[in-house]
Image (cartoon, each protein chain N blue to C red):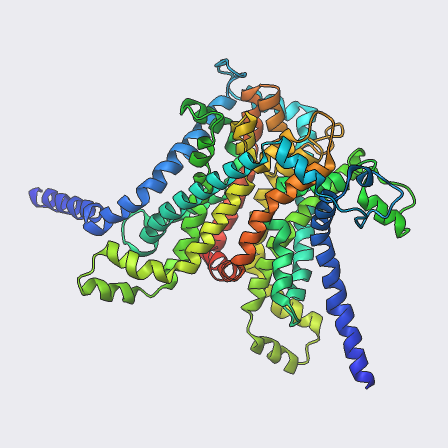
Length: 283
Length: 305
């Protein structure tokens, strides 16, 4: 009896309590984001009330947001850019990853190492000259500037990720198919790709998220409000001078965060397996 | 004499054939789109960055060649030296915090409990959600008047006076460190967790038979086996944190009085706000040596594996 109680206490102190602390740290900002967005302005700035709960929930902030700002346009921009760049990077990543993992040619290994190195290059190192490149391509202030530049950091990631996946698929399977008269392209499309689907989905959704969240390039290349992506538009255009409309800002932050959070909850299993199988085997 | 020339020619032909056999041609064909994009939008801009940084270019004007003047001037500029020091403080403190907390959190998440997968998913949220938007929430939480963190700390009696989070030079640095740790911790925890899951139970059982207590098991079994993952995660995080932009840009803009100014925010201010492109490019390039160190360490690790 007593030993059982000791075990329960040990489990509470050793697991539940610290875990609760970590969860609180991780999630409180989202709770605060959500309840701030459903409060009325007087309640938001009333210091005498209990500030951790909502007394009179309202959708006022969301109405303001959708009626008076271009939030739908920003959401569309983010979707369009993230979708396009994820597709481009996945296709180019599959081609390059397969070539490095399977084909025997001089320079294959060097190119593999080079993609890994480019994956490490931070965006803040090159945003100044890239702004000039974007300008000379005639893409300044257009969302196409992002669709062209985002793959530079997504392709290395996808390639590296997929090399690990392709290597884990036994070579003999496609060799059999090729002996039976299948071309390499058909072997790739009909045999290798279906087996690499978890890796492909993982790198695709990860690319989508990285594009959705990107900030520096979007901030530098795009100046007009209507062409901004949501991650840049909210902190730059919804803050007017020194005035912070916190209810509206929090509503916009929630609207911009929910798509990626939902996306992840659907593909959670792929994510965990991708993270544990591919990502770390790769590096 | 002639025969050796013929041999040489044969050798060259054999060597050349490696590049033109069908498999190699397919390979080059398949990597060419990725290679093209990387060369045009990564290698070329890098060359451009170096050439711009050697001029006194300002927005819209080509500028003239200065040699290394920009770099030498920066190294004597007290503001730049403070920026370098801030970047170092920011990186060292957040990376070590993330590693320490990440080790603990991974250990917790590796235990058996109900809804474990849900908890693992929730823990990942700060890392997945757009940083610029979650940092806005932190900005609101650190608000000088309405800070909910102060509200809770005062309510619990932990502090007796409001903390001026973003307005005080010391607390501003603490704030950006907290937020960076918050955002980066999931990456550390989940990566280390992935490492923990690969350690076979048999090793712990063997240690137990030898009479090892938990801390000795952790020190002699867990940590050595986690070492490669820890190295990779720390290297990744070091370069990302050194080059980090959004957290500082949104929370403090480098203030108050440059107490949180780091490389990327200073480069942005100098190049994009003040329009001194040449100098801004030079500041950005100071990230390059750090990147180089990380790459060298990383490649060494890769080779050993």
